Image (cartoon, one colour):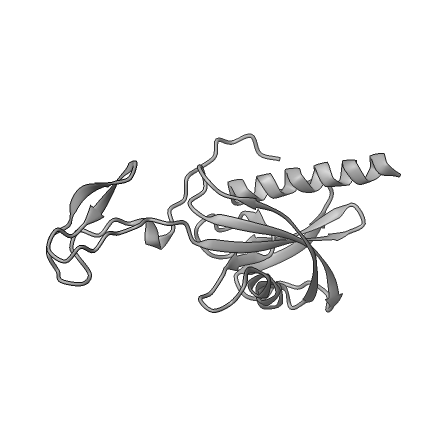
Length: 181
């Protein structure tokens, strides 16, 4: 796994407005609780910079994990788990099932939620699920140009800090299962 320093990635909604989207007045910084936020003194609008939610899934074959190589920015050419942003009106579980189908052409069954990665250095909250492929053979489709199953000692360069976290969690989970045998 890479030893590079984590890079903070901003999502599109992490840009502060300069003008109010409701009345077009210039925004000013106001104290809202413990934070300073862009706000409109004319109409009362306050901009909250909240992280979007993404969902990703660990799919394994034996002691190997499935990764796809990204064809889009950020981090084009780096590897990550299948997943993506949760769309308005869908659950995180629905999103990860949709993303596995769109990116890899597989139908998956979610087994359990492994964890939630949030906070710096990530600007995105990531729900991590463990699952099983129930139909199809993984192949590169939307947003990936290569797929592969990788063992813990042969992982390629991964795209995001949350992917490092997920792979570490996977390895700890594997060790825990082995110790319980």
